[in-house]
Every structure is written in structure tokens, then in C-alpha cells.
Image (cartoon, rainbow over all chains, first blue to last red; front, side, top):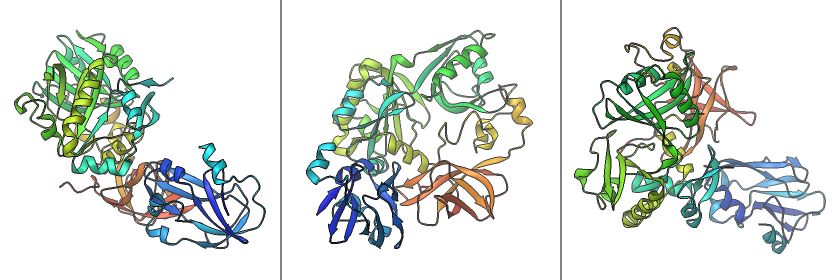
Length: 116
Length: 359
């Protein structure tokens, strides 16, 4: 199941885990991404907390946790190639969360697209 | 309410992302993005809207004398048709602005000022030139301006004007250059570290010049370029930006621009204060060794002591590295330095500016 946050993150949920990334609209607004400060495995977040920061040439932007959860994996490929998120933001996830709560407040893809 | 430049509608039509810059609505980038635009200027050419810049004229018998009083650089040993970079200081030696001065002759000069400073500059010039036989006029709203920058600039512009009519030397200019029936001021200047021209004309004619240049330069790789790459280009070239490396809180002899402070001149505003001020800080360039981007405002530490802060910093495309400019206490540039970013200390390596290697 694919859901979006109003703050432009997506989460692809598979059972109790979900991979998190940013929307195509978000990567386009950020411009050329040059660094992603990945969270660390084991970090715990509540929905709406700053999950990590993305640096583009233009600016630094905060990425928020779409759900309550604990980081169980990070996409290490982004350490050397953060531009992968520009190339395909839907395929290149940032981290995987073990979901602790529910998905209240998240939007379907169709609903999200109406907000941008 | 931000001001729209005469080229505003063209930026929007070309997909420019509009931001408020010094009270002007200007594109930070187009759909191409900052890196593509940056590389176009380094490898071919880019066209910037710089209509927000201020144009202030000094005219009269004592124009040169008045300028020598309000500017730190020497305006007497310039040839007619020359451009010269200078700072403008307060009595206390801090910086009001950094500007370009265009010398027509000893009785007529054009001062090109930063958009954010032009009103305070104009007021300052009026106030401090009363005792001179000079008329100071702000004609900023009458002019539109574009900057054609990059190694293909000469080839592009000579498709519209014969090379004999263009200023040949770097930092020279000509007025009355006819570009398809529009009278322009053309200078061989810029803010990117590349060859190029800055072109001024009546505000209602700049759209025509802009369209003509883009049309004539398209096959050579010319694209419209925004403020985002203007910043990465000037940063790579080691050029200071007012409000960052320079400000009214910073002494003019602490910014690595001593070549524009002419203490052998009879007098200029700020001279006495600067002569009595031992520099406490210097402007230093650094490459970020650790992974991460260091931006303006980050604190600089040496062995646990706060020794400065970052005035500009981002990832620069030509080097493919994060770099930053520091306002660093004198005596620390050879020490191990770190920049604090989100509670982490990233190692820096001090390097000589400009950051980029000129081809």
C-alpha cells in the first residue's frame, strides 16, 4: 500500500514495515540534491518528527516521519549518490521503518496529487 | 510588495521559479535546475536578468573628486571607458556597499550598486557630496540590465554587433552601442568568473535585447540562468557578496579586498578608522572534507574554541565538493578547523580562492 503525507513524503507499506521516500513533486522543488543526512538504524520517531535532512544546491529541507516508527534500514546507496532521488524519487527510498502506530492522516496517491 | 523587473513575464513563461530577492521578483532557477545552468555558464553561456541592480550617475566638474571622497578605491588613474571595483564605507570603516564605477570622463561616472543597497547608497552619496560641484542622480528605474556570461559570450554578441563596437578589454565599457536599434551600455564585466558582458538599456527595450540574445545564442548553448547559479558561480570564483562576506558590521580591511583600499589617497570616508584598525578577522575559503554541506551561519571551531563563522557555503558543481567562505579570526587559518552542522563537527581544509581552476 502506497500512502503520502501532506509534507510530501511517501511510505510503501508491506506488513508491519514501510519504506519511506519523497514525492516526485518534492524532489523537483528541491532541485539538485547533493547530500542526504540519513537517520541511523535504531532511531525512533513519532509521526511529524524530522526524520532526516536533504541538502540541495539551493537549500536544506527537512523530511518528516510519516508514521510513528523505528528505523530498521537505510538506503546506503544514497550516501554516495544522493542524486538518485532526483532521478527516480519513487524508486529510491531513504529508510525503512518498523511501523508502531497507525496511518491516520496519510493520503492516497490520488488525494495527495490534489494537494500539489 | 516586491517589484517585477521588465523581464518578469518572460521568466514565468520559461518556467522560472520566482523568489523575492532584495525586494525584486526574480527567478532562482528555471526548469533546467541550478547545476545545468551553472555548467552552461562555465562551458557555453548563460543569460541573467540583473535589472534589479542600481544605476547612479555622478556628473559635474568635481565628479571625480567627489567619488574619490566617497569611494575607497582611486578614481583618478582610470582611463575613460574603464570600470573599477570599489567599496563604499561609513566613517567607522564598516562597509555600506561594494560597487562598480564606470568612468566616462573626469566629469561623468556611472555607479552600479547592489539592489539591496542602492537606496541607502544614493542617500549617502547625496549627503556626502554637498560640498562638491557634482550632481548625483539615481536612474535605477530607467534601466533594464542583462548579464551574458560564459566562454561563448563574445561569439554570441558579435552576431548582433561588430567586435569593433564592443569593449575589448576586461573591465572596460562603451556607451551608445547599437544592438538592433537599441542604444546600450555594454561592459566586459560580470559576477561569474567567466568572460562576458553586462548590457544596460532603457527598461522598456531590455525585453527585445533579452529575446535577441537567447535566439542568437541558442545553437551555441546559451540558456536563461537564475539567481541560484549566479550564487554558485560567484562562490566558485571566490567573489564576495554583500550581506554575506561584506556588511555594515564588518570592517573593510577584514575581507581580503585591501587592493581597493587606497590609503595613499588624500582622504576618503572611513580612511582614518581603517588606518587605526588592526584586522581581527579575515576572509578565508575552505573545502568541506567530511561528508555534508556547510551553509551560512555555521560556527567554526578550532580546538574547542569558537573562532569564526561561515558567510557563504554550498555544494559547487565544478569541483563537485562542498565549500564555504569563513569570517575567521586572524591567526587560525593554518590550524585544524571544523564547522558545526546539526551538532556534528565537519572537518574543513583551508584553500586558496578562487575554488575553481580556471581553464
